[in-house]
Image 1: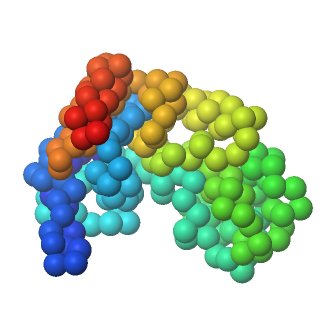
Image 2 (image 1 turned 90 degrees about the vertical axis):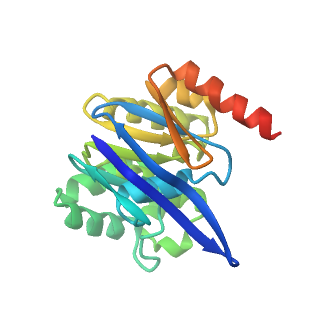
Length: 220
């Protein structure tokens, strides 16, 4: 479970204040896969970072039960001089999981071949995303934060990513950001829409998608 209690998040950019969330109170239920929808710039990635604990709220508080992943597919914390395998070993030690098991899992899933043992600075952006997705999914979290990750790779990798995600969701929950309504329909069983600093929760995925698309059409 993830609970928002009177959460406000604002930024000051070029002397102007931008509000991402304003006095938001909401519960993301345990064990549910929740799609997070909103227009570009609405603050979806910021919301994920706040849930992950890497960005503080301006006011209010966010509490949770169970373990929460870093945003799946995010490679920003990887060390460029270390190989993919060495980065996985480092992550395994931080999260207290078996290092050899995580390395073997990621090497098999990411399909990077010999690049897995080369420095990360030699990777393309797609290779980094494949490595990050494998590392994230290789650890059993209670809640996974997903930000457009399965958009990377070819059709085969996307299919394997979807299948692995669904397998993890048998024993976990998630918050999924995606611009693909097809992906939201495949992966999620509820929807939250972020619009003008407020969150609206929908148990019915189709109803949530319709509300989001209405917002998009109005802005268009």
